Length: 204
Image (cartoon, rainbow, N blue to C red):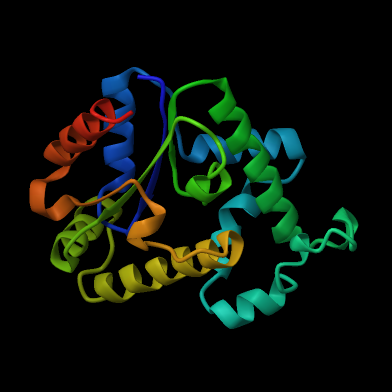
């Protein structure tokens, strides 16, 4: 298997667990928080800066204003004009391209599918699930309050969508952006892993 696999996911759908199990089955590296550590080390930014970047994207309009309306797309302004979050995104993008160039791996989140859109041998997966499935996982695994679990899930999904839509100029979760979109609550975590494995092995 010589593919780089990117995993985008709704919160509570089990995407991170699925990605980790997929990497284990293929015997390839798994990158999630490891990307933050490496990007921080190579860029000189604090890890907390990377961790906080997505959390700021609660409101898409305010986020765009705060981020300078995608100023890194304006080459005339130069790197020095970029906001801190823009620089963090570019540093993270650089690390994602590096780990993808190093060989097959699984990368969770962080706009990896968009960042690697021009790379060869990349398979983009989107994981989603029923709300009840996500609520149960969020309570059991992440310790969310049962009374606030659904609200928190929707809020985190909104952050992820705004962050992705802003940086990628694409629509988060839109089927056309992925090779495979799969409902983890239908098959369960382990069967979802097997479905993705079979899909990748049966591809080009």
